[in-house]
Image (cartoon, rainbow, N blue to C red; front, side, top):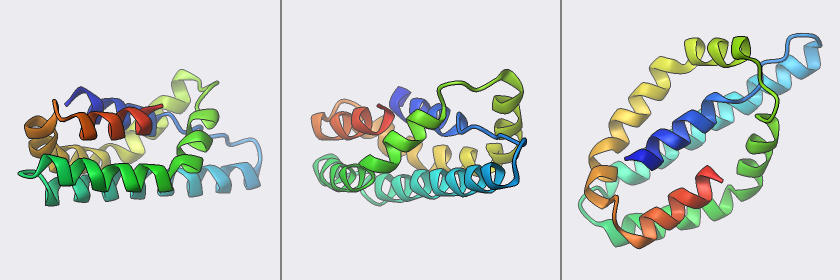
Length: 125
């Protein structure tokens, strides 16, 4: 469960620069992709909530495929201000909350599964 919230927190940290139109557009694309990745992971977790090893296998494949994006996301979050974090939290809180709610039963059930914890550790950096 802690891992799901760590991923949610990481996704909240995408910078929202407003000094340049291109940077703002890039950040919007990055955040939309971050939300899509989180929702994809929530779908995998939900679909396999009673089958921890298959969940872990599918998550590992997905996370490995998304590794360059996770690195990009982590690099983009290094120097956020409190205002940037709040703006993102406000804008994406409903969508993120739905994803976390969807993944909670599966993550609770499989939180001690080695494959699942390995995948989530890779995802959260």
